[in-house]
Length: 146
Image 1 (tube, rainbow, N blue to C red):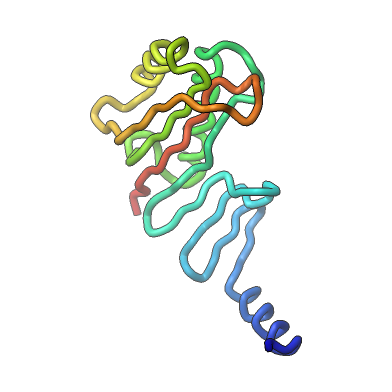
Image 2: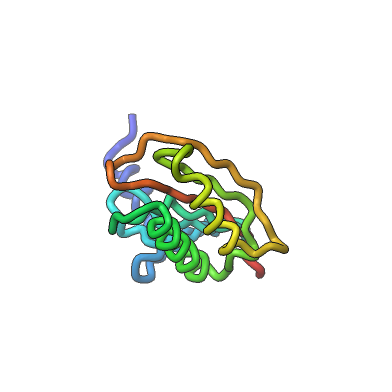
């Protein structure tokens, strides 16, 4: 059984391995967590030269064109915060509420946004969304030039 003294000692050791700057946490393992002030996730995590952003949605509503543009704007911001950009994308996962209705519009906006010389691998599927007004969610990973 673990004693209270052992738990306190372990907690103190762990606290010494974590450094927080604003809403960014730097762990001794080299993991950086951005937006870790969120209650259930980080906005993005950097490890070993790769950033993974959380799934991004547009909470403002609107049609698929508006939501896609707004979500890609959020993706740009998170990539910039991590020190990279869309030219370094590795993977993209896209969830659409109604793939039959919205794929063509989303795909056109995606293609206009994408760096044509540096395309990631991508999967696009239809999915039930967390809230009825969400039409799209995008999650990406990207390399960071170090």
